[in-house]
Image 1 (cartoon, rainbow, N blue to C red):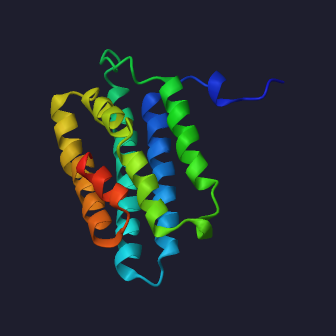
Image 2 (cartoon, rainbow, N blue to C red):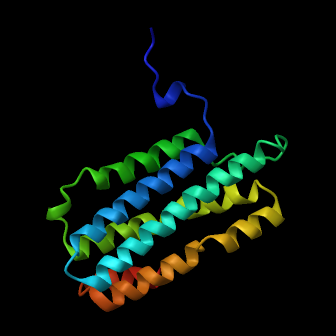
Image 3 (cartoon, rainbow, N blue to C red):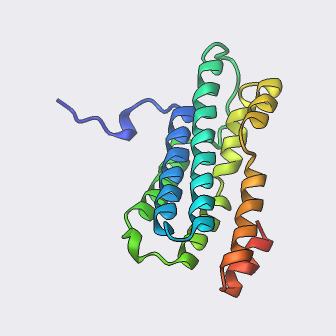
Length: 171
C-alpha cells in the first residue's frame, strides 16, 4: 500500500494555508512561553498567535463558502509549491530549540514571516470568496497590516538591534 504524502493528496489551498497560519501561530505561542517573566512581551506574542489562529479559522470558513461556488477562480500563484515552501520555512522555526532563541531572534523570525508572501496569499484566498464576503472576513479578523503595525511597535519598544529597527520601516 502506498504511503500518503502531502504531494499525493489533492491540493486544497484554503486548508493548506489555514494549516500554515496555524504553524505561524505555534511559532508565536512558543515565543510567548519564552517571556513568562515579562508580561508585556508574553502578552504581545500570545496575541500575535491568537491573531494567526483567527486567520486560520477565517480560511476554513472561506473554504466552506467557496465549496458552494465552485466557479470562483483562485489565483494561480497560490500553489502547492508555494504552500510547501512556506510550510518548510515556518516548520524550520519550530525545530529550533525554543530556549536558545533570544528576544532579538524572535523579532527577526516574526519579521521574516510577516514580510513573506503569506499575507498576500491570505488576501487572495479571501478574494476567492467574492468581494462582499472577503470584506466581511477582513473585518472579522485582525488585518495583516494591523499585525505588522503591532510588530513594528514591539520591535521599537523592546529590540536594541538597529537592523531590526530598519527592517520594521520596510514592513
